[in-house]
Length: 74
Image (cartoon, rainbow, N blue to C red; front, side, top):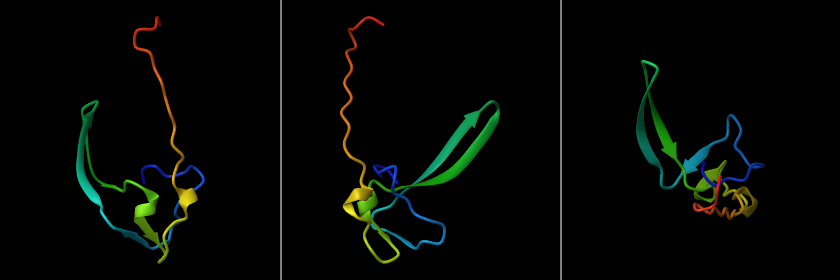
């Protein structure tokens, strides 16, 4: 679940409803091995229904601002 607060999560056994899932087939090769798996992307915890209820607003991660200066010396 993208954009979820570190303090929020679901537990084993919770029933989840996903309104707009994005299912993606991943295929990766590393050191001669191939790894293939399905990924289900959920853009926000607020788009879920957990055990019949919407998560609270506190389930959403707060925004962060990160700045960089590509011309600054390393």
